Image (tube, rainbow, N blue to C red; front, side):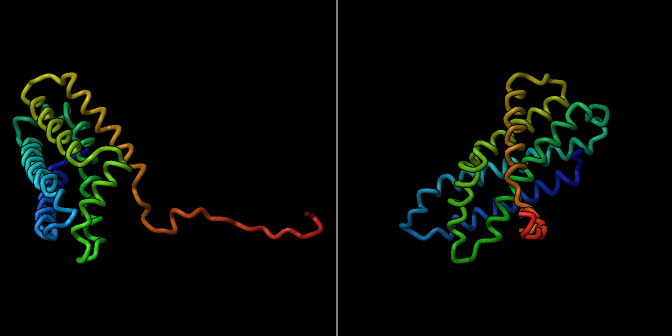
Length: 190
């Protein structure tokens, strides 16, 4: 179940990541190969703020008394999109946090590679899905139907979320290694 506190945290994370990308964009060395990414980074910053705005609107809807009797219509779908947004932002902010200051400007390439080649959906596409789907959820609260476009976006986000969950890093390196138990067998029984 999604609530306004979770949505507030997502808004903050989206804005935090937008600020990080602004800093990354400013750190790109002039005449560097990474200069070609400036347009993509700037676009992502805009999309993150756009997502932040629509998530704020969703948060307000969860708190608004006039929607209290209708929230059941969108609760499960809001939880779906919130989970995927949270995982995307967690991966992105985690990659930035692990990068050394000397290699911060390389984070964009690393993140783009992971999202595009490992999880199979680039950041720009995700941000558009999240925005459009959340906008559709708000429209549902106003009485508009859940249409075929929203159903396709929902299916895409659901598939992405399954992929994201499959790519999550275990909490500790020990957790990913299987425990092998050895049994000493007498050589005569071999």
